[in-house]
Length: 524
Image (cartoon, rainbow, N blue to C red; front, side, top):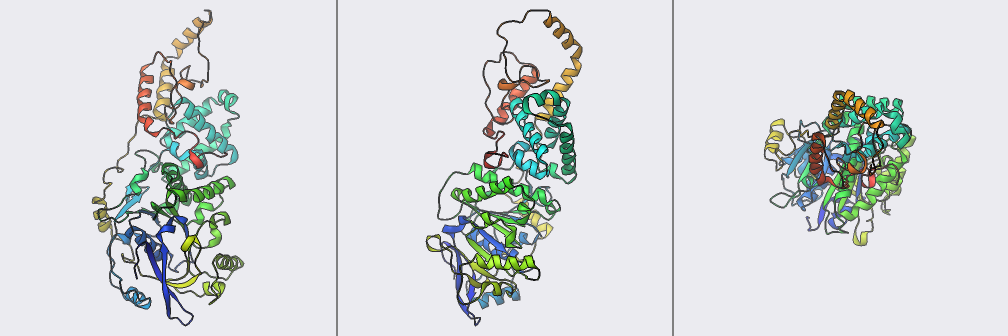
């Protein structure tokens, strides 16, 4: 029943419960995105595993979050169990074999997988404001902070860098407000308190270096299988906003970094967004619009995005309309909202004259779903009542010992497991504060002497930050945030020489400036 260029999902049933035909997902349309929905306990996780195995077997890398820990078993060979063999017999799956798949474990906290990090600069002001649940005035201050860091060449790598920059802004709020607009000390204080909450929730472990390279989640194994990147999310789900923000950041990074490929024979990467409702809960309109835009455009980069959630109403209609491959498990219809969800799910399918979708959705058994995928010319197939095939990998979690063995053989062993804390905004601002304190008396005398002398011709003018003297502005622009420097600066102190060294290190990230691609600003 296996076919080249297709993923076997299961077999559809006739009204008399006899097997109708096998149901496939065509790899040519794997980047047209998808949706897996259903109530708790109806089989969504197994369906996700079946799809991940199918993509991996076809040589497509996969990234998915392991919310309950059950998905980790995909790394181990499955074991014969009565309910698995019975399902294979029910659908006539004579080719059913157990197998294991190449897995790379990831964990924002570094406990159950390789550490996943990004920098504050790469996260950008929009997503950072979303992470902190910032108000509109606070969002404005966060945007100003990124602008100042960009202008002054202050690399924002971790939370202490951002906290130091906020302290500087608070101390110089009056001067900075005249250049950028109102910088309220009350807003700065609120943002600092939000940062403290993030630190207590463990978010500081997410910000720093070495930052995740997108290419490391797009690997294939020696046997040609796509590597399955499994993010340990059981602890991460204690902070659902961090979880949603991280996955959205990753999606935006994929969009920014990957080249256009059109419609390839198979996806370059498939991205499963489990508990997708967390992405859209209380999301501002601008963020929802950006998600819609990324989902629409990332298809041309060869990336398929599959949302996994309990209720189709969790996904906005503008996003829902772009999800061509759909697997609908059972829904309950006790409350008015649940009844509306059933109707919404039924109305999104191409009708099957053999049954009523709305009625069937409430009567589906565990491991059974309504399935519609894109077929010839990208048109959706007629919806079919389908028994999902059993997975080849283990159903259930790996043990701690098995996880450790897999990580010890990981191709990324040692690349992300140690923190790198190079000179950035925290160190630069601290050095400047120390220098200012030590030379305050001498500077006062020099300023008094300078006021008694005529102004020399040729004095440069331009953008200057309070406390940064005349070496900020164009001369220092981009040393931390990825913009080029202007020429003409003749003399440098020891601190400035060190900062130039920092700039050469950061030069590999040219282009990651204030506007972080399509998700990096509040307004276009």
